Image (cartoon, rainbow, N blue to C red; front, side):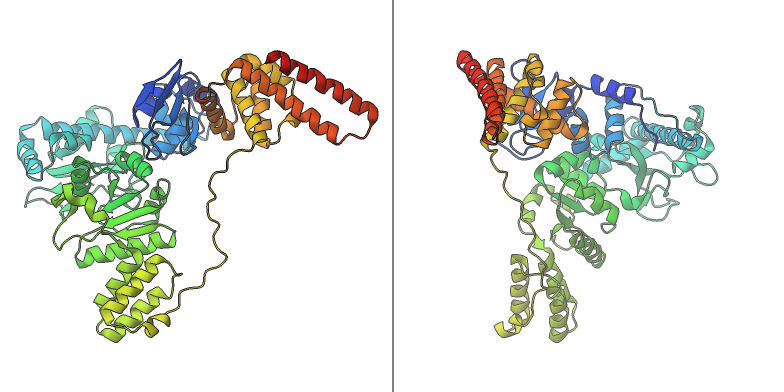
Length: 550
């Protein structure tokens, strides 16, 4: 991948408005100066604890501890890497990007990708216009209305109509080549439009850029086989990597720490229209490794809701197995036979409370698929013996006992898997001890009052115990931007200074306290009388300064 020039990165960060970017995810209220406050977009909370500094382009949440600069925020909320976040910001704030010199092949590949994305975007607009503005779209609009899908939600998902012809000719008029049209999956081998008259569902990447389409059959004389047909696999579109609607669901998935995976696109649209947002579709397939990798960036709690038919059961089972191996907490939402989430979207949320755990679903399925009672026991025992003991396993054991009328002695013979060393549990965040707090608040004072940098420079790194504080001190003294791994700390210091109202005078006192602490430590370990006398004199001066400051 081509590397963006450092100056371009600086230009993007300078042009980006963090208040505008954060405002896309949560409402902000203006405070004093450049400070804004709001509810955190990364976790549920009632009282606003999310602080944004418009001047410094940084944010920090006192509730969950997340923090950083505008690039960090985009990476976290959009699920992008550094380059992707810079490109996202550059596109939004209209900053041209320059890339480092790369091989001609790499540069050609990047430019080709950009042209294919532009072509697909124009195709999406073409389909949208035919659906909403052309006479041919009237019957399709009626179809959508009949499915309960309004115009507002349909336009949010950018639904369109392929007229069956005209797209390729229009694209060629705008300078796109036959090779580009074929590579984007928009034409067939003869150079004609690939999609006949069909309802078009644009498929987007993490940045919301269209990378392909799924098309629904509208007419019986449709030449393409299948009720739903996807764009051909290409350098942009890989079906196994796409979760429909993820670019829209991402904030809700991250904030609510859960994702519901359904089978069809219309299920996603109907549920979002009903106000249920953390939902995506696997587009008729089981969850793949790529799907799980994408979801793992946002949550480890997944609900699967596929059709209750045999194919749906198999898709659920395959997806569950992959997710379970990767440490996901999996639950299954079972709908009545023949019903889809889109059939009753307003009543979907309560169904999550009735969802089955992974083990309960597996054991129930093994029992129902067995030819007789003995086979059911053997199959269920194989599942239960492979997992460690847990409340979910106990629940599945009770199901097995109830269904097969087993005595307690038989159940006790189904031993759980033996786990290794107990997993380290996440320790609650410890309160900072007085010394660490003094260091952090001293640095926060310097962030808030840059005129204190000279006083900070008089202290050496030995005045700070924590390595990250030493590095932050060096960055502030050099008046340089913090290193990437210190940006979150810098944002926290800024928010702390504002939240606690650290004044310049208080900052001066804290810096003196750090000097005092270092002198007292030196005195404790000093055996040379002359040196001890010198240290005591320095200590007296510091204490005198503290007295005068008070």
